[in-house]
Length: 479
Figure 1 (cartoon, rainbow, N blue to C red):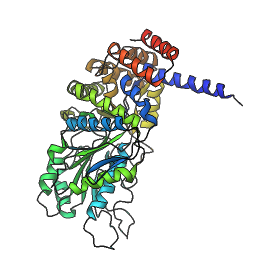
Figure 2: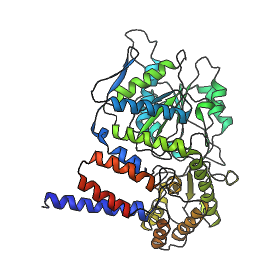
Figure 3: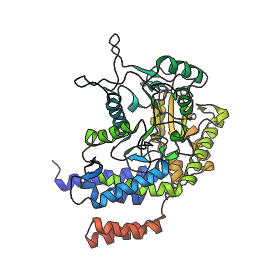
Figure 4: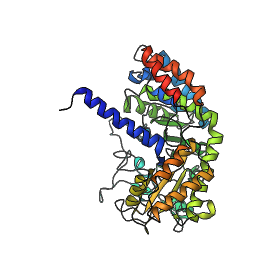
């Protein structure tokens, strides 16, 4: 039986090995991940990470139920302002700790909202009908009945299935909605909630089309946009709140620079017909879904939002340029790329490839991983099962932040095709490529960050010798 010290040493070695591989030797192309900056990481481990700050609005005043929370109150107020500026909206709910929780908070709020006028003693009903993206055609799990929508939409008593209908897609391009069919379905079914957003996300969602069609209905649907994958591209990719969306949700750690959290946002001024919905959403965030809302990552999200508001224009443009260049280069080298070539294959950070002629996606993604290229195998719209996927889904956002540009993704595409088409081992070449991209961009430079980081470190770990050794080692290894 290993001793306590031996177990600590063993785990520490595994952590070190994994950090070296993921942060210094491999190319990460998972579209739902990013590495936070040094300053964001230090915020995550600061004192608030072990604290509570439950609060809710009572008689028009925000009441906190713990002492020692003045700092966190300031952080939340500042973060709401910063994210409100980023989204161009008035209301931001920060307490969901994941994108899936953010979606569930909205679904819970919707159920309370649609029951606002029910007679006393009558049981609450669920949503009668929800429209979303088909899971098999790129829809996100969190907006499916098997995900966060579970138990919030009524069932068909004959089939036992929930009353959910999917956006129709074009036969020639299943990554885009068929607007003609969509209009007919909306007129015939009139859902109470329309949920936009995907996990396999290449093109804009038809928000304005749906809003313009339904805006004059006696009971128009609430329009929700799950921006989990494209939150960091808000504005350059799509501005849902300007196109007619009522509420947006998302996770803050994919294309956004943040730690792993969720957010809900929208415009709900007093007097708005949906103001009660916003109040119900807030009530489901707390006390409905959270107690401790993870204050360390909340503080980290504020730092990440400072970074995003400072650098978003340059970052967002480079992400889109890199994704298009990457897709085009893969196509030129013999890989089948999903999407419409005339549109540059993608308008987001994602590139989706079809690899069936070389093996299934799971097998190919494993071969890429063995060569230190980290991807995500993906069932494509015409696949029969997720267990036998034809595709691989990739995102350029993390490596864009580490400084890769169009020509670098062209080089990477060559290594990928060497693995997929030629069956070659390119691990050493991948590691050499990664060596050129170790310093994070779109944030403080290491030399700017180091003095600030040292102050924070000394306050987290008040042991002078430890902090001094850490900082000397850190400075010695600056890129």
